[in-house]
Image (cartoon, rainbow, N blue to C red; front, side):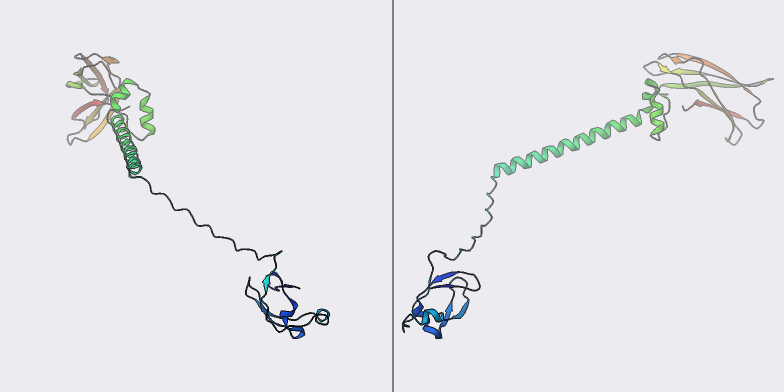
Length: 231
């Protein structure tokens, strides 16, 4: 006869005599360990002689218990050779050095652009607008340019201011506009005006004379200062 475990449904082929007839006996599933009481069906007990031997319950051959799934462990990582580790370290350190060098070069270029903005504006005047957009004052290149021999003259018409502009540099430079300011006895500015230079460019070692009238000067004006105007 065939028994079926009510829990795991494993089937067993057993001898009816091992169940002690209609009284039955307690059996245990060898697959899941569940126990239950089993008797011989009445129709089989009437036709079979019940023996006293205690038979062993064997699993049926046609439906053996399903084996539990085996757990697969994670493969152990292989150790990285020291040569590969040192190579990776050198590669990272080399890349870091190149990044630091690139950052330093970028900072140096930016610093040069900011410090030498006057010369850059002199070579390329449209750069003044770019400096203005960046919040930097694009002062004209006055390196080597110098205002000398400044002389204010009182005239019936007002005040005339004369002087010289010398280029002590090594290259021809654009002459910026001049800012002529009048000051009182306390060195306080009381009046100013912006005038064009006598010529647009000045060769190295050359000197050019300028002269500009100052109509209706302030009575408090006692001194004059002439500088290069900012763009």
